[in-house]
Structures are given as structure tokens and as C-alpha cells.
Length: 522
Ligand code: FAD
Ligand code: DLZ
Ligand code: SF4
Figure 1 (cartoon, rainbow, N blue to C red):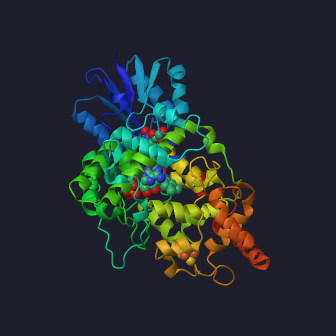
Figure 2: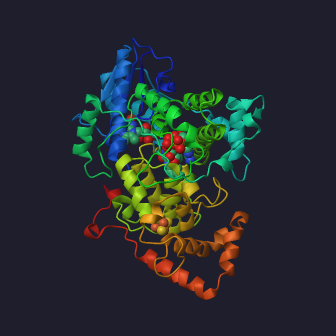
Figure 3: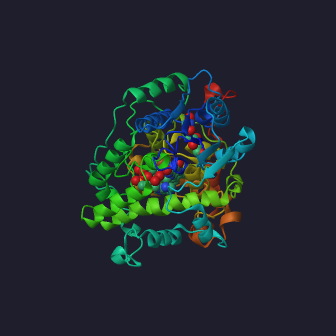
């Protein structure tokens, strides 16, 4: 029976479930660029280019195989602007008996799909996305009945099940985790490798023109655009990372440096998340590098843990906990997102650097996301939904299933400790130790209160004080509470007064547009 197979913008793998059993003679593959997806948050310009250019290249590769592809462009005058609208229109063009689709990476779209059978009168088969190591049912078996989840235990089960970095049932090297070796600061004079960039071809240039015309008001620089948009180029980027950066990945995984946005990181998340690379091939490439002596175990284990551990774990939590997960706000954080998250205009040098990197590249590495942009949002008590919308918009790799648990759980502790055992809250001393940002700042990380005090120091103790009701009983927070409670009362009062004055001075909107729209209203 002729089938309409819908392939979404993050399903760009030749072996994605919706294409299983494809009959090239009779079936039609439908791919649609739709306004609802490009604007439900104001995505970074490079993110839109990346997804639409990768979709157009993927469609062309299918056509080269002789597959019938019906591709609807964003600027098609008849484009209805939504998945449901385009599916309905496509049914008028093709005589098919059923619709097949892979389940999406977002609850919002999954809910939409549930209505398609009724809307179209056809059978709609939503196939499980089997591109992950851990199926949803497998995660549920691990999670059901647990009061709290911890990545490390989940990760060990994944190591055993996949055999990655295993000798029989034991981890290679005798340890599961080498993180103790992975928190070094960047050695003086270290020169991270230049990263492969891919010059846009005519197809990508066409999308860039479209984005420049239609999304000029969205956050982020459009050029230079250097992301790979085909599987062949994504494989080149992976090979380059394995050869040039992986060997040093572990040691300085948590380091940050001005003017070095990529350091030794993989830069593979966008490719993994849209399907240009598979998690298995990326992990195997890293393991092979270790087995042939080209990269040390602490680097390779650390890298594989990010993918086999964290990536699978946050996805598991997302589907296990949604839709209620997004609604919690355990710390009752309610302040609006400061405007500098969009403008980058702030005298906190660390935040200016991270927002600047994000604007230029649609990328920031993990520690920048967690311990600078995220740490500030946590300490300042920003409303989780606003923080989540920002992360979803600004990073090229951001899709709800991976962004939400990282922001809602890991950064904002809005789930009350389901994903992480304590909030990742830190004062200026952490940022000073792990980066060179403070050297160029108006504030001083060593000054705790009074003139020149680093706002992270003030906000840290204010956070501890304000959230005592929720966090005081957490055994992992006992030390900061003992320190706070032992502090002289006059000093405590001064810290709180200065922290609150700082918070009151944060602008949610720029002076010029106060009372008008923000990026989120676009
Ligand atoms: P590397 O540092 O080289 O790590 C290798 C791979 O491990 C990544 O490509 C990624 O696939 C995986 N990984 C590492 N950490 C995580 C994690 N915590 N959760 C899931 N996968 C992980 N990652 C996304 O893919 N999309 C997001 O929207 C996203 N939002 C984040 C928001 C916050 C607040 C934080 C703290 C982390 C977020 N991450 C997200 C995880 C991580 O920061 C990125 O995966 C990583 O920075 C991507 O760059 P890379 O490929 O160079 O990663
Ligand atoms: C993120 C995104 C964007 C910007 N545009 C499209 C699009 O035009 N067409 C499409 O199929 N997918 C797009 N995506 C990815 C979807 O939003 C993605 O499939 C969902 O987030 C997953 O549920
Ligand atoms: Fe950031 Fe404080 Fe360092 Fe300035 S002094 S860069 S605000 S941590």
C-alpha cells in the first residue's frame, strides 16, 4: 500500500524508523519547512540555516537514490506554516493509504501527531525513534520505583549493555569514571586546534539568504556559517575531532578561555541531534582511538560518558517525566530573564564572553552553559520557563528532549533534585579558577562584599539564604549552610542588601524597548 513517510528536521538519518520498509516505487517521503517550527522560539539564525540546509541536502540525497521526495520550502506561497497543515495539503497531492512517522524529540510535536489520524482519516503509525542506545521502555524499567535518579548508575548499566570500554563485565582500566583527572585548568600557552569549518555551498547559501530576509530580527550572527550540513562533512568533522582534540578533551574538559569557544570539545551535538551522525559511531570512533593508543583513557571515557551516559540519561528523564516535568518550579524562581542574555551588554565579563560566543557561533561548551549562563540564572532566581526558552533558541544543538532536562533539572534545580543531587551553584571563585575571564572584569572574584565585589559572590549567599527552606536539609548542601550560619550577622546583612540591590538593577528589557516586545514575543 502506498505510504506517506514524514521526515522531520531532526530525523535526517537514512536508517530513521520512518524509512524502514520504504517502497521506492510507490511511497512518498514528505519533508516540510514550516514557520511554526522556525519561530516557536526565536531560534538563532545559524540554527535555522543548519536545520533547513541539512534537510535540503538530505532530501537531495534521497532523490539521488531514486526515492520520491515531496519537499515543501518555507517560501512556497501555499505553505500553511505548520506540520498538520502541510500534512493535510500533501494528502491532496498523493494517493496514499497510510502515514508513517518517527516519534519526534518534543512532547509538543508528539501531542500534535496524536491528532493526525482523526484529522486525516488515515492510519498514522508513529514509530519509536531507535537511534538511541536506550529505548524508552528500557529507561522506564531502570527508573520505575526509584525516588531519585543518578546518571552514574544508569551509565554503568549502559556500559555493560553496549560493551563500550568493557573487558568482560569489568570497565577497562579498572574504573568506571576518570573525572578526577578531568578538572585541570588550561596550561599556559596551550593552543587548542583550529576546527574544521565547511564553506556553505549554493544550497546552504540559498537558505542563508532566506534566513537573512525572514529572520533578520532573530538572535545571533548569520555569518560566518561553518557547520557541516551533510553526513559526509559531519564525518569529516568527527575524524578531525578524534585526531586533533580528543587526546586533550579529558584533562581540560571544564576549562574556559577568552577567545577560545571550542577548546578541545567534540562539536558533534548538532550532528548527533539531527541524525547526521549516530551516537554509536561517535562512541566507537573514540573507543577505537583509545584501543590504538591515539588518545588516553581519561579523555575517551569522559567523552563516551557524555554521550552514552548524560545524553541517554537526559532523554530518558524527558520522556519518563513529561509533560509534568516542565511545570515544576521547586525553588519558586520568578524573576524575568535579564535583557543581557540577548544583547550581551553586561559588565560581568564572564557573561559577556559566553553570550558573545553564543551569538557568534550558536554554540557554547558545557561549562559555559552550566557554570556561567546557567549558574547566574539559578543564583538570580530567573523563572525556569524563560531560561529554557532562551537555551532552546540560542544553541544550534537545542531540541526540547535534551535542552529541557539540562536546564530545568541540572541548571535550575526546578525539579527539586530528580536529575541532580544538588544545585550546581557556585561563587566567582569557581569561574576564576576555571577561566581567564575575571582578569578582564570590572569586578573582583576575591572581593566578597562591598566595592568591586563579584556579583556571583553576593548572589551565591543570597541564593543560599533565600532557599534555606528547600535546601537546608540536603546533606550535600550542609557545608555552605554551616558557613552561612557561622557568618557574622552584620556581614550577612550587608551581603543580602547588596545582592538585592544588584538584582533590583537587572533589566528584563533594554531601555529603548521597555513596554514593547522582547525577543520572546517575536
Ligand atoms: P562535548 O563536550 O564534546 O561532549 C560530547 C557529546 O556529549 C555532546 O556532543 C553531546 O551529545 C553529549 N553531551 C555532553 N553533555 C551532555 C548533557 N549534559 N546532556 C546531553 N548530552 C550531553 N546538549 C545538546 O545536545 N542540546 C542542548 O540543547 C543542550 N543544552 C544544554 C543546556 C545546558 C544548561 C547544559 C548545562 C548543557 C546542555 N547540553 C545540551 C549539553 C552539552 O552542553 C552539549 O551537548 C555540548 O556542549 C555540545 O557540544 P560538544 O558536541 O562540543 O560536546
Ligand atoms: C527546529 C526546526 C526548525 C527550525 N525548522 C524545522 C522545519 O522547518 N521543519 C522540520 O521538519 N523541523 C524543523 N525543526 C525541527 C523540529 O522543530 C523538530 O522536529 C522538533 O523540534 C522535534 O519534535
Ligand atoms: Fe564573572 Fe565575577 Fe569573574 Fe567578573 S569577577 S568575570 S563577574 S566571576
